[in-house]
Image (tube, rainbow, N blue to C red; front, side):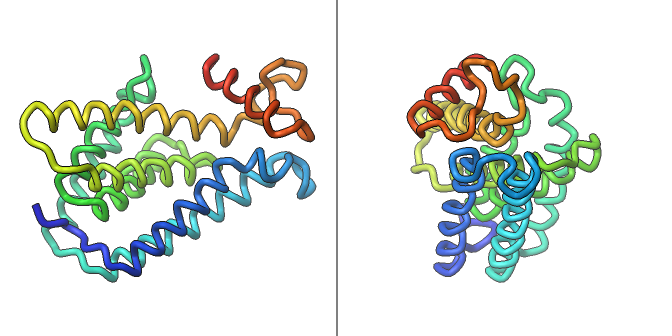
Length: 217
């Protein structure tokens, strides 16, 4: 099926750069220590603002590629559906209902549509549920790339396609949680804990602590 939102080579370059900046933002505990800018919460807020700016640039570039009225209407409907579904799941038993619509939409309507839907559905959900906070840009960015990468999956038919989407949904859901945990890890535990973030530790020891934290949570 033809993509609902066309991705030009320039948009591809912008998205690639955004992905690299996003990884830096998610891995900020290994880049900037809390308290470096006068407040323990300054780094996560700074990188959160950076992600918002990156998302705005990417969305504007995608919009330049063109989006027809039918795709825009479908985007509005699916954003509303995802916003309504999110409180029903919210990670209960490890299940995120948002990903169900997001992965299928990215698969059917293409990577550009999946990226935009990830942003709009999470933003709408945050406004409805009062979930606006420094964590929201990280959630929007993560979901945007889950939807986009679903559009890049290789073509398959029948049961192979179902299996492909199931495996991708499981892996992307775990990776989403892995990255989101990393963004708030430095503030979530007593510093005396063996799996807490401690500024100044060597990268390998810090990484082992985080892996233990992620498995524990």
